[in-house]
Length: 209
Image 1 (cartoon, rainbow, N blue to C red):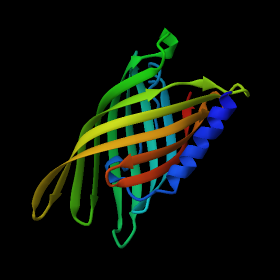
Image 2 (image 1 turned 60 degrees about the horizontal axis):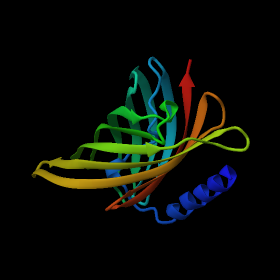
Image 3 (image 1 turned 135 degrees about the vertical axis):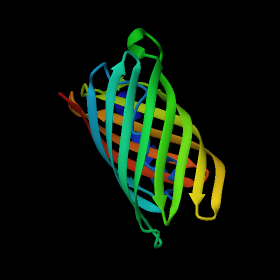
Image 4 (image 1 turned 30 degrees about the vertical axis):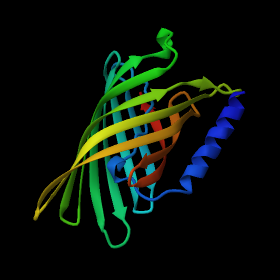
């Protein structure tokens, strides 16, 4: 049964990949389920992002601060197409888990604040907002965990340049799969969809000792 769910999910990700164009509001992807890291646990990850407007290489660090609460930071190198040059991008988020399957809840559910910054062509972009993540872990026939997840984010996008400032409202959706191929490492595939377009992210995460 779970093998069929796994196959259908991969096909869905592949179909969405064909529509890739742009997703600047979620420039560094989501790349996390609703489950938080255990207290004191540390996780690192590396990811490749592909859209019609840019290619990104992203690193992530997450740390379990307290029960049902962790923090994450991301940094990325972004290469824009069509003469847009390149830029560094940074993100920070906090995740508060409200529902937990290990506490006999039907799904994992988390929410939190989110901040992203990057600068390109002498224009600064700030994204301030929040998000909700829903996920559920399944066990495949081979004993490995597979966790589909979705995220809905809302944010204010502030654009700062030499001619002034401009504020916009952005709404973004992310959906993906986390596959645990060892007890300490997971692979990710993710689609990000916004009103400006979509993007694909792939990568791996590793639990530090």
